[in-house]
Length: 315
Image (cartoon, rainbow, N blue to C red):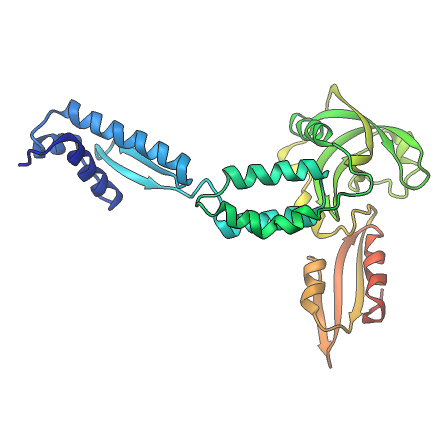
């Protein structure tokens, strides 16, 4: 039997818990010659300490009660904060994306570094990105599109139609569209909305008429957006699969689904397979690869042309 002060008792119980031991309140009361109410207060203090510790270092450790065994134990869960390396990588990706206005990018990175790291190395991360952050160049027509982005996201989740005024790149004209939003995607510096047009009179002017091929809109070019009260209904099994769509889209140019085949004569077939996730190598001979891929639209033509003599389209 033990007769020790309250601080030592709590420390002993905590040590046993973090070592993986499961403890029973009744047995602890007998061991430390005290009441179960006192042990319960000790357990509550340990629980509060773990909560504060999560806030400080981001490692989630929760004191759990097993009702079947009537035992307390600590359950370790994944950290809620980034490691130094993770945060550095995220900041580098953000800066390279050039997706936001400079003041927005500065604010986002500051929030990440100040609140998202689980060690005291935030000064090191800051120094590693300071130069790139200082020379950050926002896009030519950088706009504040956060509100529009969120409205689209909410409309997708609640299945509301939206109406937008959109500035087209081709003829610089503004058009109005009533749309069924399907997804938000990011590619090549910009955020895009993928959406379907139900109006047959509008769709007949498009190259692709089938409803399975959505239209794509750069979110920063949306001049006005209204979320309508009118609803659409998509079953979960029929939901738009943006992950599968992303595998088959290049430079966010919409269009019909097609299968292409080309010869690749470059040094890194891995770069081709990474760029075209649906690509498969059919054969290889003397460093020349025959590749097939399934893609949406005409964006693939831009990529093929960018490869010069390294690529020869077969079909």
